[in-house]
Structure formats: structure tokens, C-alpha cells
Length: 217
Image 1 (cartoon, rainbow, N blue to C red):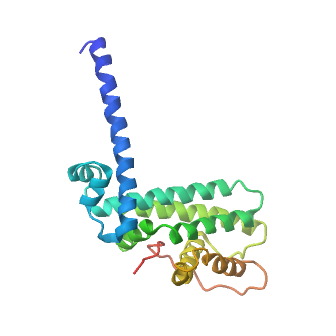
Image 2 (tube, helix red, strand yellow):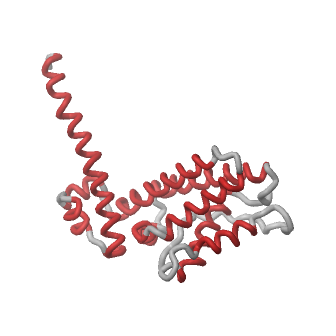
Image 3 (tube, helix red, strand yellow):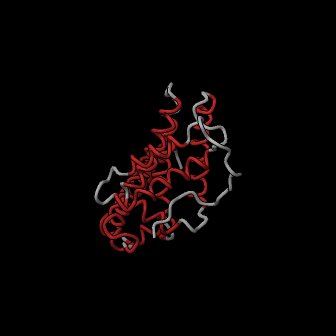
């Protein structure tokens, strides 16, 4: 192929890539909306119709429904990791950790689509989800270590503890959220105060768990 022919062929290729990106974004947005409205029973056909694409296109992007759920969760995980990294730039280590935990609980409390997706994949060792959880633990670990160096956070807490406590706060407040969507803030404050370094006894050894995402039953 001549140079001129290659140049002429390049723009359509670029357009195809851009179209694929737009289609994926539209698909994820439609899936989140369908799951938010219909829960885990939302169908691929409903998602495809809302995104304005065929079912075959959905399966070309996501071979299984589990893969589609995992992609939704991964986007939310990426957003929470980004929050943690921004908070790491705060001078106040305690405030940074508390804001990260607040963002985590708020994510579950206000995102039924995420909760439904979590329910479907929480017992599955999906590699995309596992990678995201490792990032979250590392982010939480970094924020916790800063607060521990300042002497304000108990020294025996780790990143996994922080993530599990985020889930615990959500579970505690879940029965109240329909009446008061901000009810979790009370329980986060109680939990965070319990994480302080003063007036505490030693913790039992930490148990490593495969899944840190809450399962909605």
C-alpha cells in the first residue's frame, strides 16, 4: 500500500476506535441505569435497547453478564482509588482518611446499581474485581500509615481493616437509608472514633479475606 493509501485508510480506523470507546461508555451507562431500576434481574436486551445497540454488540464488549457487572464495579473502584490519592495530598492525615472512608460508604449507600452488581459477583473471583480490591487496600493502607505516623490512628490497623470497616458502616446503616440517606454518617463517626490511638487495647490478629465488597442479600 502506498503512503497516500495508508493515510487515507488511517482516519476510518481512528473513527472505529473512537466509536468503540463511545459504545462502551454508552453501554456501561445504560447497564448502570437498568440495574438501578430493575436490580440484578435487568436483562441484556433491556441494556442493549437503552444503549441503542444490538445484543450482539453487548456480548462483543462483555462476553458474559458477570463481565459487565465487573466493569461497572471496576469503574466505581477506580473512582474511589482516585479519591484516596487526592486525599493523600491533604496535610491533615486524619481528615484524609475520614474523607476516603466517607466516599466509600457513600458510594454503596447511594448506588443501587453498584450494590446489585456487587451482589452478583461478590462470590466470584473475577480478576478485574480482585485487581481493583488490591488497589483499594493499597490506597487505604497508605492513608492509614500516614495517620499512624502522626500518632492519631491506632498502630495495629491496616488497609484491609479500613476497607472492611467501610463495608461494616454501610451494613449497619442500611436498614435506615430509605428513611434517611445520610444515616451512615453517624455510624462512620462512631467507627472512626474507635480507630483512634488513645485508650485502646490490642486487637486480635488480622484475618486475610478474599472479598472486601459487601454482598447485598
